[in-house]
Length: 134
Image 1 (cartoon, rainbow, N blue to C red):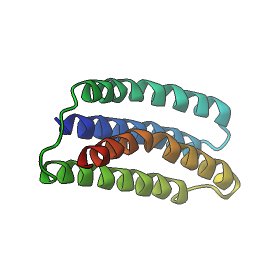
Image 2 (cartoon, rainbow, N blue to C red; image 1 turned 180 degrees about the vertical axis):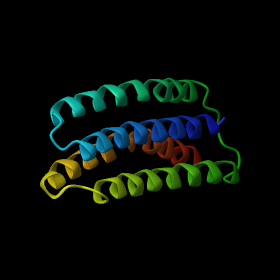
Image 3 (tube, helix red, strand yellow; image 1 turned 30 degrees about the vertical axis):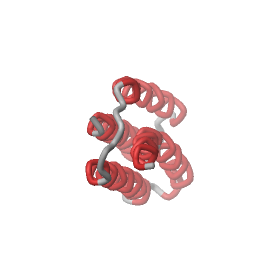
Image 4 (cartoon, one colour; image 1 turned 60 degrees about the horizontal axis):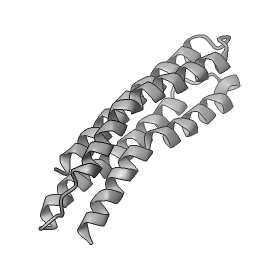
């Protein structure tokens, strides 16, 4: 049942990336937009996007079975690690391309916040896989 954690990570990463990209594009299109309002909407969107992955992680933890072979955990662990790396790369890319010079600091701040929001579910999944290997 390790793929329930992979599903939680995939849903979490792609939903949060979508919300962050939407927020950054809104700021890039209209530099005069109220950034605080965009950030507020971003946090609400991230909270909604995290609800299903959190439920999946809880279900996965309650139905956790021991791993009998290392091979059954390496593939899901690799997927989760690659997914986290993709999320970081994608957000960094969004904060560097097409950013107005006067908003560069604010956009990078939103990007760092986004990285902090997108990493927890894949990190929890990776920790569960590593602990099951012991």
